[in-house]
Image (cartoon, rainbow over all chains, first blue to last red; front, side, top):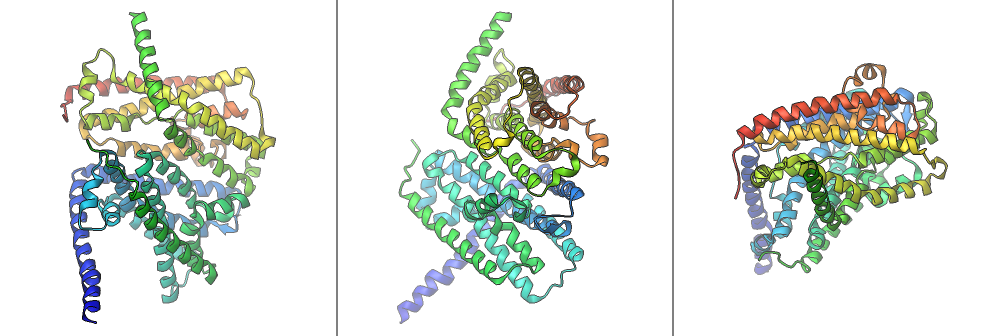
Length: 277
Length: 263
């Protein structure tokens, strides 16, 4: 009994403590790296604001010709923009900078050192770097979202906010898994930077309600690359349009993706042959 | 002298083409990542958005296919390569060589475009299989004129990015400026929506900027939509000359500022 108790303590709580501590060191080091380029932070801020203006402009072109696309009116479609901006910020803050590192680890063979460390390799690889520029985008996204609340007269209660948080967490897990799956393939293909460009251009379509695409593309976007689950369902949840089964499905899909990406990483590591001289 | 420049060009081209062929899988992925216009087309036609701008479904699909092609052959990434080279100290030997470093990058881009061509063609064929009604064969003169316009569009973007790349002499990380410039390029060039669909408050000033001449203008010519060919080419040339002068100036003062890095 005592051993069982100790096991949970050592591998559970102590581990979480250790990981949190390591994570705070990660953040500290990468933020000090990023702050070296202060002007860049400013330029990135302008870039994300312009990007948002651009996509609202595009939406306004669509809606100048019609009242609704795929059953969504302008104010509702703006929610998707908000959620997209938040998620894009998350991608730019956590996933993108780390992915660049993974490619480098594998090309230069420095993954050896990561694997030798007494810490989970997936944790190290996924959270080593953080880029504060994306945080601005997240703030911007939440700003748009709160404006949308006003536009759409959304009455906000505890229940809906819990569901929103759950769906957002699910979207982030799906996004993370997609990015991590692609970066895992680096072990075989070494240069996967371009594959992420493909993913990026597909994810770009998450700015628009999935119902505005034709049926075949909608199928594609909910099975092959689950963009539907990433932006459209959280927006539907906000509007109170989403039935319960969609939310449950989203949770299931994100769990599957997370587990699969974990398994895939473990599987891929078996094929890792170091590259250093 | 003339002869030796051509010799340098062809040698550089051969080596770069061989180099690019080695990375053909990556280039194929690049080609696939340019499919955004097709998704946009889907939104346009699926919601009947094109009815009020008087472009038929078929013409719009031709437009977006042309936009895809123009984009494929005017993608420029020189700032990223130059930034890497500058940070790793590879620029120093380039500067010593009796050849402007950007000619090397220029040839790299041309070689990459030729490697990319078959992949773009395959994507176009797949597009026609799904949309057989939009199949069209432009006349030879149209193809030649649009090729020239696409090349000019490529030159404009190459020079714009070269100007930004020259900022590497001052800031070391110029790619964030490029990302900033990419936003108006994306939304105003006509890649996501034809410029003719833009509202009047944008149309009134957009032709004063270089953006519509990057994708909308060549794509309109290729797809047979309305375009003022002579005026467009003339304006493209003006921009090219302007950017070239700016680039020369910045490059000159930048190389004076240059401090060798790396190694």
